Image 1 (cartoon, rainbow, N blue to C red):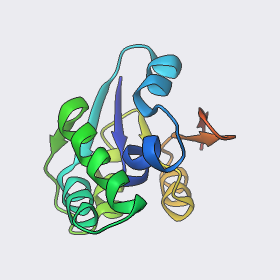
Image 2 (image 1 turned 135 degrees about the vertical axis):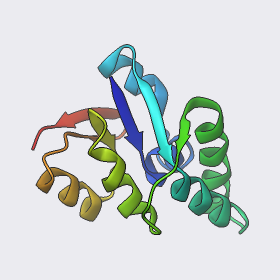
Image 3 (image 1 turned 30 degrees about the vertical axis):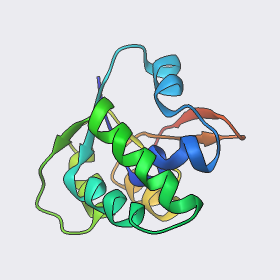
Image 4 (image 1 turned 45 degrees about the vertical axis):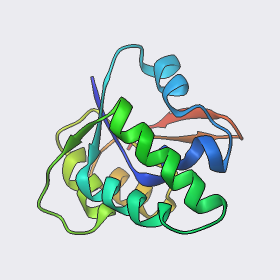
Length: 124
């Protein structure tokens, strides 16, 4: 089983206190986590700032590099890259509502936050 993660899924441990990979373990058991290179670049860029968002982005970039396999793509925008890779995986992980809608329209099941600290699967 393979999942693709977007930036907010990787920033969730700091931003909302959810254990992203612990929740994926609970939901899926064994899986391979993929992250588009554009998402890592976005996290690196956001991590250069100050404040909670920058901290969350730095943590997210570190998680992406330690827990995920970076994947190349043709898209130049991170959300488009997630959508592109979603065609090759079983699930996409995001709580970004516009991206979630695009993924569900493309018949990709989405893993997102339910409540404050739990993930759930939304089928198209």
